[in-house]
Amino acid sequence: MNKILLKNGTLILPETTVNKDILIRGETISDIDTDLHSKPGTEVVDCAGKLIFPGILDPHTHMGIPIKDGISADNFETGTRSAIHGGVTTIIDFTILEEDQTLFESVEKRLKLAEYSYSDYSLHCNITRFSKKLFNEIPKLIQSGIISFKVFTTYEEVGIMFTYEQIEEVAKIIAEHRGLLMVHAEDNRIIQNAFKPLISRNLTEPLYHPLSRPDTAEATAVERMVNISIQTGCPIYIVHLSSAKGLKWAQHQEKVFVETCPQYLLLDDRVYHQDDGRMFVTSPPHRKTENIKALWQGIINGNIQTIGTDHCPFLISDKEVGIPFQNIPNGMGGVETLFPVMLAQFIQKGLDLSLLSRLLSTNAAKLFGIYPRKGALIPNADADLVVVDPHKVSTDWFNDLVSVTDWNAFVQFPAIFPEHVFRRGDWLVKNGELSLSSRGIFLAGDALSSHHL
Ligand code: URP
Ligand code: ZN
Ligand code: ZN
Image (cartoon, rainbow, N blue to C red; front, side, top):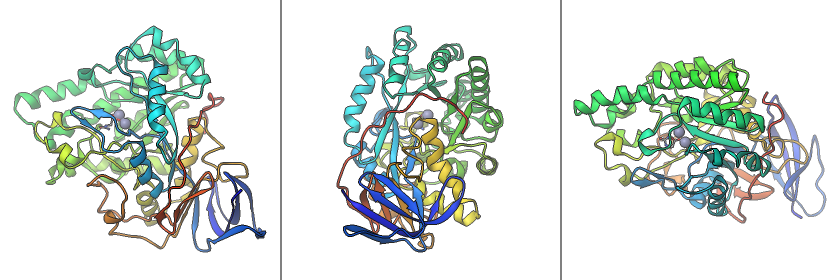
């Protein structure tokens, strides 16, 4: 059994920061204390001056999914290669419900593909067809460790939208069985009303994409979700929240949880005026700059619980379609830069690193039923650890990425890449270099007993 002693690191725990040693034995953390001594056969890593975070958990990735005429550029293997390079030791991806498939079949098919993952993984179950027969599967799915279900309030044109009434129906079932409902919240009618006049005036360039999906669409859908959560008692997780108006509705609700993404915290809608504006076509779109301030405030106040990536990258050539913007496959990558870019931002802004640890690891682990195995730096937790030197800030890192994609939205931002990454005790990044000696495993979530973080 491998034994690795991390000496003198600064541990970024969810509530505090301490200087202690960590002993890894096999796949788990066996001890955390001051002045642990190494026994023969123990490899010692000097972590003086280094920060140690729990392994990063990205709760929102889309590896190899079909969108419009494209397929997102990363599969589980390539996407998690880059994830590990950036410190993401766990991902939670989504199933894809095909015609005539049961929910269980959609899970099984996706789990097969996920076996190539280097990060540990779990799945959210997409419910994109309204059918009582499908809903009958929910209790058993929760028992088998798939505890989160996602619905869409939009994308009617591709047949995956649920009405608010339909969402309420499914929320009741999920609540009864202690699962979690995730929602892509943009009101479809508001989008259609915004979209039609643009098309009739032939305003089809990428810069019109944000006008076709206004923040009022997000706010309306979030408001409806808050009401559904109150009516049904169902915990609801709003994915990729992008706007101040949406946040206003979601905050201070006992059972409504909010995820935002680095792209909404860092990039406003001026990106659509750039030459590569089409690359930023993602839904919801980048917003007016005042939203960025409101989202950071939400982070600081604890009104946003997680930062996920919505990792769904496309190559430059995939997005070349350009015009009309509604034909561009929507989505962008970010799993490799999630932690490096957010860490640099937190340090630059002087924000609490324990807050970052909660946003990037602990809170998602709790919400998706895999805490304290993940998201915790405590004995018996999986030895998922990210060791980073806070002084090694890089502004020229694009060529160091291991991603197969040829574009990254965050190139203008500083980043701090991990020096070492351990996933269940396996040393997968050593001195900044990948050394992928083993694959990830499936993590079954526990039904939620309490939805308070
Ligand atoms: O435009 C995006 N975000 N694409 C990925 C799928 C989704 O809606 O999350
Ligand atoms: Zn979405
Ligand atoms: Zn998504």
